[in-house]
Image 1: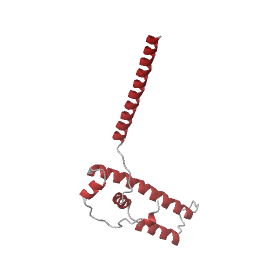
Image 2: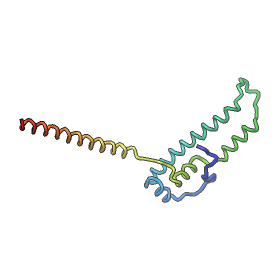
Image 3: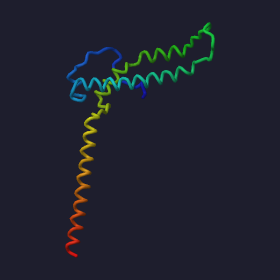
Length: 140
């Protein structure tokens, strides 16, 4: 994800819980769980990206006596500190309809219903074949 182009708030902002509830799952607590999971994903991505950029500045050195301060490294660190926090980005994504979520129980129930209908159709076809066989036997 490109964190440079994120338009989320960089400061603390009071949120309308009813708006968050209606934008999300319809249940405030489920919506908060979805936002929390998305926030964790964003945080991991941000940490991974920062670690990759900081690896460029690693100097293999076994002594703790020398500490090098690189101006570029400091600027990169300051840039990432100024970015919007992951929870703000997650809320912005929810407001912009960019978060996809689903209920696992409902998905499992739907799979069960689909399987049951497929089984019923297979049973109906088998019953039809049995009926056809019996009518052929009677006709003979």
